[in-house]
Length: 241
Image 1 (cartoon, rainbow, N blue to C red):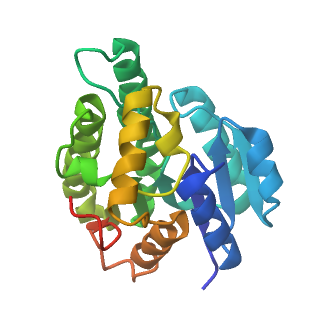
Image 2 (spheres, rainbow, N blue to C red):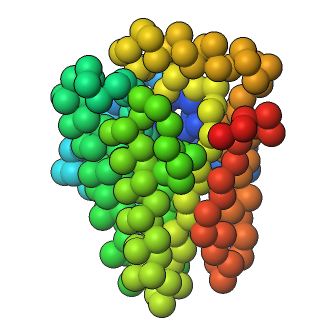
């Protein structure tokens, strides 16, 4: 079967980069989106169109999708991976960090859905993969705003699945636990960073690799179109919560 176009947001590092490398190795044409264009281009993947796009910019996202489809044909899957994790106690956290996470983790993800879902429904084929977190299924100290955004991803994904399932379109949620990516270093709160380092040492220093999450995404996507793996929650075996 001819490999169809896959879009990956936040493809310049971490899970997005690992997923881009994996799907490229399997022969898929890719539209790779991120704010750091130089990082995308440095991947040097074949049949990959790289565009500098902030997913909160709906117009830029739509334009990039149109370019990708003009080059490779209709999009078959979008992997909404771009996200922010800014942690802190609610008595101290800058509310601007809440705004940034809501804009990227929720509204930006919805922009990705919006860019592809109408065409998928019309073609009666497509897959939307929303990358969430175990924070979308439980709560953690110092995670209030972040947990809120990831619970939103789970809720909107389930509601979206109900809407598009009659049109043979799949919605899949991938919810990783602690993963060795840049996301762990973006948090501006030094106390939170130190606490994560201490917790990681307590569980033996073993957390998920980005490539392991990418493999879960591949597994879910490469099922027959009639099979929708609605959700995969994964974490290192020694992560207790």
